[in-house]
Length: 312
Length: 253
Image 1 (cartoon, rainbow over the protein chains, first blue to last red):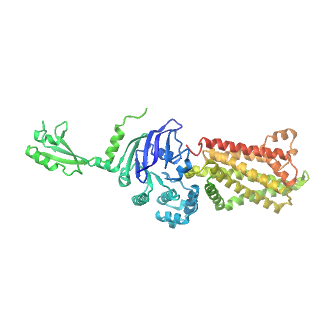
Image 2 (cartoon, rainbow over the protein chains, first blue to last red):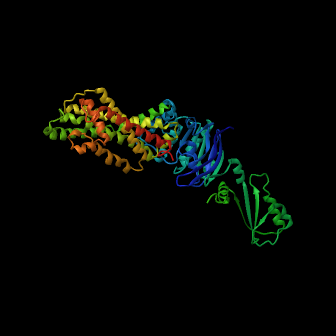
């Protein structure tokens, strides 16, 4: 797949001296759903804002569809739709008027049928003549999505789409996102909910303290998550492992009361049964058994914690 | 040039104006009528004539200018400050729109509104006094230039204001005194000699004087100087806006 967004060596230092982004490189492929995952203040919103033209970058360059976002900003921005994190709507504007306004900003001629389609898709058609101040929070968020879609963008950015949104609306939103992807729209969303990234993303980028730590296929990450550990607590401490157990590469705890066995849950043979048989044969008595899976969260936390402070 | 975007901003701003049409029009019409009653009828009946013109008619150009200046500034400053305040400016920033188009849309709408109000007040004036306009074309040109340049000025205030207080401060502290001391209700020649010189430093004097010339063919200062002053002010505002946006300042971080 061809890349539609290229972020090259982008840094952002705010006026106060805060370095929000530090030499970020990122290539986003056409038609994918990329989730940018990171704790609050990691630089997710700054990165999106730079690509969309809301924030000026300090150094580096960004191109969208081959158009530089500064030199050729009109062509670049025409391809982008943005759903901001905070609800920011003119309170006294009617929903449909707001959509017409946004479409006009992108230089597109009026297209009532298309706008009706967008509003229906987001279950807002009945509210087209309501002022935005009369709408519920969830509806306002959908209005923001409708505004982002009303000029038919090729790339859609959603900044924390699930913040303060109930489960029902979140599911609806994911459905809309999947439909858009099926239509060929590239989608980038930021989130700090790992489940959200797991549920809809094709790739996951992990960002922390202004640096991108990892961008990987979700499936690869899930495979990593398929890695499981079984902790076997023993009735009595085991001074040394018998040779018959060597092939399991078991780890022993310091007090010699626990054995840890690592295996692939998705593998054809987990080796659990034969381990138990061999333990039994060696006369080792078990107190308890516990298995746990490494989650995306573990990977995430270990990545963020492993990295030494990037700057002082 | 993304004319569609200019039109989109303009139309949306005008829609706001028409949404609040009652308060947008009633308040200037009411205050102008009050000025006519107090200055024109009550006090004016004792003044009779200024430079051969009945006092009631004499104050008409000044009254129109008073409203047009304050309305231009408040409309334009609010027009850009409000989306900044509620955050919806992000849409304009993320759209393929240049700063020239943003200025044309917002300032164009604000200037149209104050032009509208100026003409309504002129219409109201015909109910109170006998009025003939000697140079109608010049009158319209002066009014238009004033609407545009003071809407630009208001736009600058809106760009730079960090809160509602600052938004009110400049019009209150600077514009109102300048307008009242700018000869809205009297001829500069009625001032003591020293103050006449001081008055020449007030830019509003030139506006009102020039505007009055288009009505009555007489002015405190030469009409050419009036035109030059307003052109200078216009250029100054354009320069400040260009510089503000060039640095991405105030609406982009």
